[in-house]
Every structure is written in structure tokens, then in C-alpha cells.
Length: 128
Image (cartoon, rainbow, N blue to C red):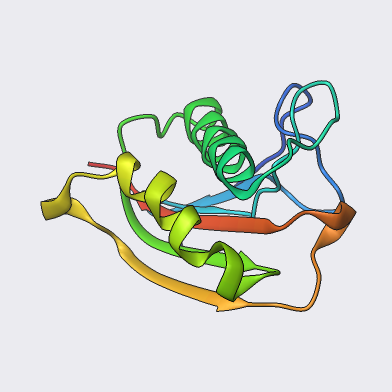
């Protein structure tokens, strides 16, 4: 049986429920969906700014867990206003990855997210 490590960071992205920021097992890191909450507790306006904040928070968790250079292999995106925000979110999201290294991804529309946010994203990453 492999060892499982639960990562919760006091100085990490704000938590909105009881969970670990990430769980590590066998060289894999499963990141909890992150919200676009800034260090001061505020939520930026606009889907572009919220997408940037979420991606920053995910990278922050990866770094704190020792997975800064890991391969992002799977992504799930949750949008509250899918029709309105999908293309604009993609414009920001696509800057994160080289075209030849796009991870598998699911993107779904949802009715609501915590704290009134418009987007939540989670990652599954693998150490290189």
C-alpha cells in the first residue's frame, strides 16, 4: 500500500470548506478545486481575472506541495455562466499550456459555486 499525504497549508489559498488543499499518492497530486479568492479575501471581478486568480492559486498549491515542475495531466473547470464565460475563460486558460502539452480537460456549467464565484478549477498532476 502506498503512502498518502494530505496537504493543508495555513498560508495557502483561502479554504471555503473542510478539505485538504491537495492529496498526494504514488507521485500523483490531486488538487482540490480552487476558487478565485485573492490573499486579502476578495474575489476579482470578471471571468478573466477570476480565471487568472484560480490558476495562480492552483500553482501555489502545487509549489507548496513540492510539485512545482509536475505535469498537469487532468483539469476540471466549473463555470456558473457557461455560455457567457466559456470563450473568455479559454483565452486565459490556453496561455498556461503549450499547444502540444494540453492536459485532458472537462468543462461543465453549474448552477452555483461557493462565495458567489463564477469559476472553480481542479488539477490532477504527476511528478516528472
